[in-house]
Image (cartoon, rainbow, N blue to C red; front, side, top):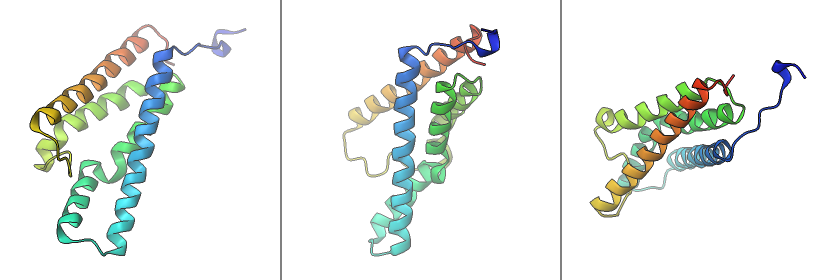
Length: 143
């Protein structure tokens, strides 16, 4: 079998990361669709409308969930583009609260400690994923 046609076995981490971010992206797009439908149909109070608009802004109107799907698919297919996609997601998630000047988690009703713990966990996972994909890229596993 030629090197161009050899099969590369995907590690369990590639599977887990791909499935997680694919599910995360699909649920995000479904949420954006639901919010757009609710806003179009009306019937929501002013506070609910503001919360829904903040949610749309926090997802960049569906761009971030779509990037999650693109990153998951590109990682599963072992493409080099996975690293820039996930790095872009990290940069977007870090800069979005400063740019929007709003609560990046609209409707969150937990304590500040819970919110900080969630952010640390979320950013930690995304940073670990970026490092993992970078190492895959450096070892030539991504094509």
